[in-house]
Image 1 (cartoon, rainbow, N blue to C red):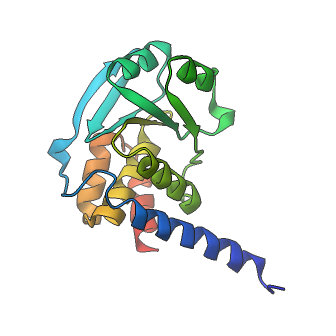
Image 2 (tube, rainbow, N blue to C red):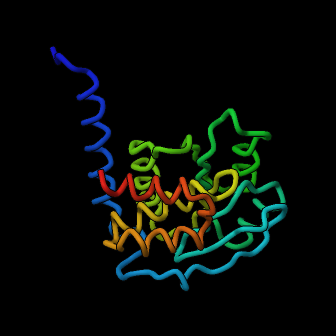
Length: 185
């Protein structure tokens, strides 16, 4: 019997995160990225902050028109980082009705949940080569995930990764601080 179940839980989460980051090195393909490679922002329906890097799109909460535009842009996978308590409509049904695959991986703010970020990494790797929309309410959590991904999987410096994350959605300093804390663990 394990005398400290907390250690087991944290150890398991850390192993999942490390394994997933290692598996996801090729999620964007080889090479490095810079802030000027983030395209956008553009408007899809009611969301005006859609950005794009490689095969990933980042956004705040899209509406039905936004999902239709995503589909028209070739998106086949939607990863929603919002907690179910934040959902104001049946996004899953709307996404699936358009023939896209839907995932909900709640990221509840800061500090970032390593297990949730590892799950996002796994999904991005699983759908390598497909156009993927990753969104939350405002794109702050999305930019935070992207920054940790670029630093962890692509060896980008924390400063450069945060700058790319800012282009993809980070507007709040606590999110940038959480990226640094996540990367220093």
